[in-house]
Amino acid sequence: MKPKAKRTYRTTLARALLGVGVGTLVGTGVIAALAGAMVLTGAVDRGPGLGARFAALLLLAALAWLLAMGLVSPLWWWLDRRGHRRWVSGVLVGGAGMGLLGAAWSAQTLRAMPLSGGFVGGLGYYLGAAVLTLLCAALGAVLGWIVWRIAYRKAPSVAEVF
Image (cartoon, rainbow, N blue to C red; front, side, top):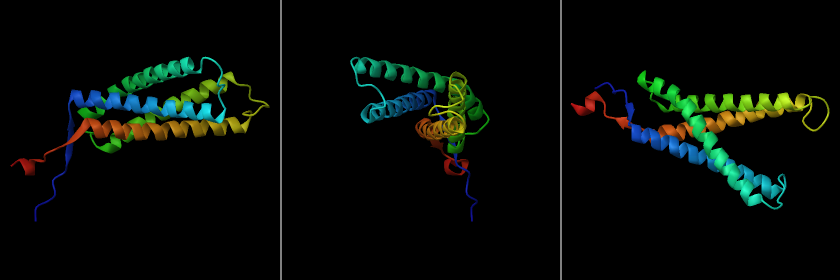
């Protein structure tokens, strides 16, 4: 009985760029869906200029996602060069990157808000910040898997080639 050959994966620059582009579009779509839900539930004012505000939000979300993908890409390249090409690497890089972004966003908001009284004061704010960080990490993990799935293809094993 032949031992089962370990499957490896490989990518090209074109597939990697396509994965980053699709990840940016999906992330922007998620932000658009969340903003739309906020408008529908009345959490955001539906007054004049809503279309322009929504368009500006989409543009800023796309730029932010593209920047985030650009910041994570060197780590992805480094892992790829060291042979870490499985889906787990994409999920971990995406989850860690977005989790750190969510934590930084929460910390920045925490600095700007008063800690006493109000709707989000005290312990409730910290719980909200933790939930935001975890949601960002989960979204980043899903996007990391999507980018990995688009960017990588199975490489034939040595046993299959010969």
